Length: 202
Image (tube, rainbow, N blue to C red; front, side, top):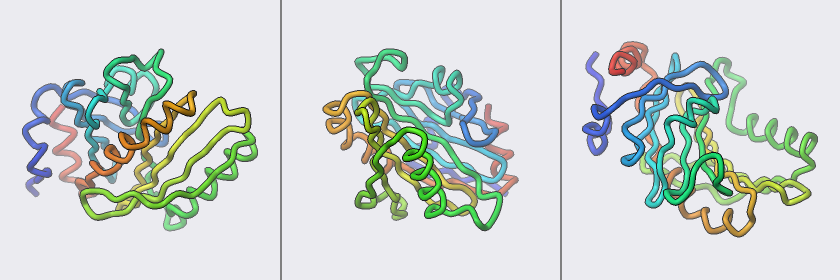
């Protein structure tokens, strides 16, 4: 079966593809060069893509080193020193019981119990495919970490996109960029043949 990628990004894939990992399950990250910032995150039964917003760069090297599906940093900073970063992971739907609602509930309990954090649901964010992302804001009690987490329900996996900051002002200033990153989400395929074709593009 011939794989057809979203046309507006198809040409970007042939400039330098790399292998990466994400946190929740073994995967491959196919990513065009850092400056153009398109990442395709692939697992056994899923492939999806996101694109870095303006003034942010895709950091392929640190995504791989940190075990993330994709990592993004402000263009004026680096992964190691930036007070604010964004990254993506995936949760495969290995069982019917894995849902966005269940994942949010489990993550919220973990944040409250382990980090004494507050968790607040936000208005959903849209994506260019018309699928809404459920969003939570998480703040540690000691104000040492601020996060916005988007959960996007795909056919065979849940995409997780995170804005994380050690600074409250930087966090607030970066929320529009987070919304643009979430908006760029596109599900590609869950077809094994098409996924194998994508893996072969390395």
